[in-house]
Image (cartoon, rainbow, N blue to C red):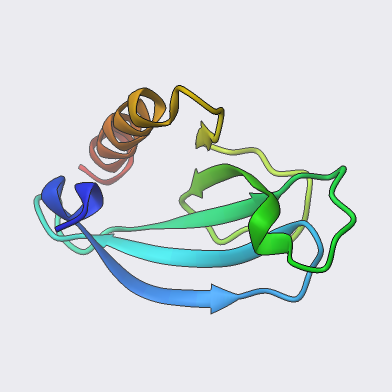
Length: 106
């Protein structure tokens, strides 16, 4: 079980993206109260990356109520993938998703 699942989120869809700035979008829904509300997680590519495998250059996971369609984004919540702080940052990110669920959907 993933941390998202433990915290009451279900992965509904994964959408690969052709644009240079994002690798894929995940649609997650709340599996706890408030029920069935959704957020979009976007896996953002480092803008300095010039290689072919953009999924290897993810530097931010952004969460938004609406699916982003262009950059720049106004992220409601984001996880920066900094070396050495991932677990700590991940816990804060998921807590922020939970707060967003209750602030926007209660």
